[in-house]
Amino acid sequence: MKRPLPLKIAKALVKLSNGEIITASSAKHPFVTLLIKEGLIISKGKHKKTLQLRNKSELDDFIENQLQINNIENYVRILEEDVQNRANLVKTTTDSKTKKIRTFKGFLINSYSPINATLNGEKICINPPQGSYMFISDFESFKIPEDITIVGMENAENFHRIRQQQYLFEDINPLFISRYPQNQNTDFIKWMKQIPNNYLHFGDFDFAGIGIYLNEYKKHLGDKAHFYIPQDIKINIENNGNRERYNKQNINFEINCIKENKLKELVDLIKKSQKGLDQEFYIK
Image 1 (tube, rainbow, N blue to C red):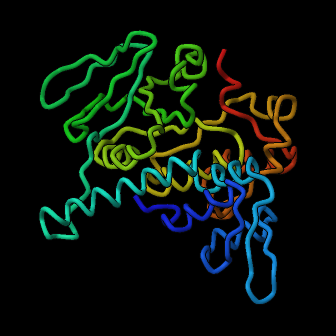
Image 2 (image 1 turned 90 degrees about the horizontal axis):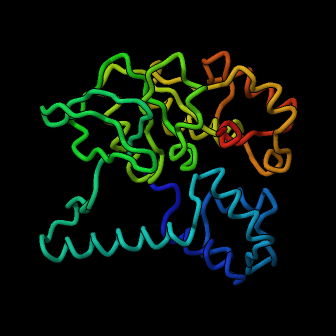
Image 3 (image 1 turned 180 degrees about the vertical axis):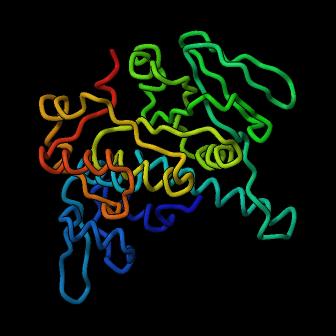
């Protein structure tokens, strides 16, 4: 998966988050330019320009909404580990193109009703007890019935508490997939491309959630992917939506490229009400 930020730029953002003032020349990147344009980073000086952060929490929110990085410090640590792993592999193989070692591959699944499936040619029953999940590692051999709809849960709390959302999916047979940890997302997309099942994305009802759906799933899965929109979304956004969160978000997708009519209507609703709604609202 393509890195949303180079290690050098991510380190510069960490320095700014820690209150340091850095030179503009050490953080040349389109995303930094965007941060300056948005007023999150202050640029000073005429000849030797410096950069200073205005507000750490606003930067954290912007990075999460725009790049889906929920902790910039952890992001840097993970990239540094990747660099170290690559260096060690070069030393032992003298091949700089050797792929990095992945301790785990696959993705987390959950279900509130039994689903018969096969894994490595053996029959299994997906029926995790409440409070537990299943992790599918050999996803290449993982097969489920074609009438099962894959429901992608954007937020961890919703994935954990699927039984409290059962009322939302009474008209389908769902198998729930967790978006986290995000480094497993590539495996999930590979698996989805090799099976005929449809994908339903259940995420936050705001520009960030729609961006995640379009940029991480829809562009890879095409017509088999749809964004889940509850029937009562209009009244719930108007009465329970969050205006502050709306004000912090920018649109990172092309509205004119959206082909799903209901999703277009949702975008219009969010813009009109100037509010967004967390998917956790639907946990009963």
